[in-house]
Image (cartoon, rainbow, N blue to C red):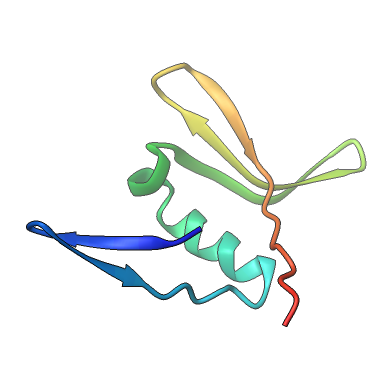
Amino acid sequence: MNLFQLHHQDMKEIREIPFEKEKDIQHLCEKNLKQLLGLKFIASEFRVAGFRIDTLAFDDQTQSFVIIEYKTRNIPA
């Protein structure tokens, strides 16, 4: 998918720089959860009954927990 930056009426294509590791995406999102999704960060790598949750967050608006799972996509060279 192409990404563009809009400046007045001009569009400039933005070059995608893929993340090398899933952990890089996770750290960036966790640090900016409030700005990105309006969520409160609770825990990273949270374990429940033998399962691991990448990020556990809380949505104050709906008073509910949110589970976030990160995946990278493998793009052939």
